[in-house]
Length: 275
Length: 273
Image (cartoon, rainbow over the protein chains, first blue to last red):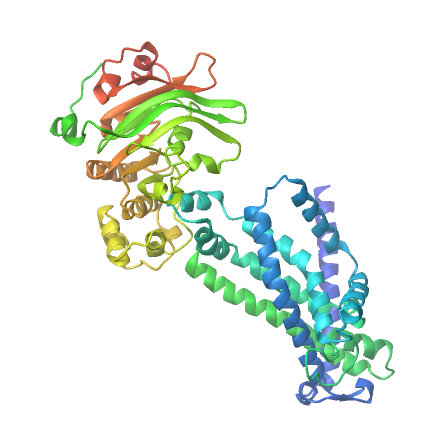
């Protein structure tokens, strides 16, 4: 029986890995044939069939920056409040927690329509990088808050007691003990938010829009990499090759952010905390 | 009972380390967790400059008791304290008491060594900064020297405190506490997670600190209590067996050699516990 379970686990595991490698391999092989540095530096034309994706990369990074600028401060403050200050069993906190849970399960198209209604129409931001970034921020916040709050909670209570026993204020305790200790979780939260933002299409179609020109300000519409891929495959006959190449760029971007953050974090953790 | 000779006991008469005014005076203190009473009606005095021990079996409220003395107990949810504690003649439950200052004056050493997840030197400097001391570096170094840790760590002050051994961590915690120049150091079974060699070092340290600091130590280890304490309070369960109270108290020899209380006599003689 155990042998059977083991082999099933192996088969499933290998199948998953195979799938990942098939997708990666397909993307890499097809794009490698046509890839050149100009693709990263040129503007697209002919609906994206020709040219590069320079303005699209810039729009993506701008959307990402807007959403992180909102997610990180608000997310940190909320998770810190939930973990360190809130009366855990009070009705209000239970409602807040449930809401966060529900929000993290809402499909992204709903966030897209919400963002369109609130930011684009009601607040008059139109189809713009700003409304796209803000919509993504709302979408990423629940995930960020849950991840980071878990990190704050994993700080051993001994440390809190020790800090208080030395007559430290709560502020110093949080600044010098809780936040450094929970830093890995904070970065995991950032990585997850970046991943979620880069992968998003549905929420952006209605908020940051389709325009593939170079944005001049945050109030311009801008096309993200994932929307570019979607558009090239669905709406542009003959856009396949450039869709492949854009996918490669997107995947490399995501892997690079993850690796970078992980490396920084590991060396820092070893130097400072060492458990 | 075999009578043993303790050189430091003969060297230090009780008068030498203590003056007559108690630094801590506890009056009718009771502690409740929810409705459950942890200990009741404890009254005791801690003499300035002495080592006072609290002995007794597990679960009779010894640790909870010393956590009341600098109001750390308020950090535990649903704890409620009844009674008064006077520190240097002032009631610590007075609303005008500054908790940060109180905890600076009455430090705690925990059962598990708990250095903060920072470097060795920051562990000492951070509380010093918090309390706005000057000459922080000198103070930190002299604290490390006074616990005998300086030679062992002087080349790795910036490395994480968690890399130290258990005994070193505990001495670092003591250094961190005495750097703040407290009046009283509460020790909650400071050696219970340490090996015999580290324990010996900590006990030696207690002897050195005595006189300059008032030390209140909770210990399960009766031999340790005999070695380090000038005065001993023996806690025991009350008649219902659920909450703690003081059964006997006095100088170390009063309690260990001629206790008037039968339970405590049996306990220190090793017949119960």
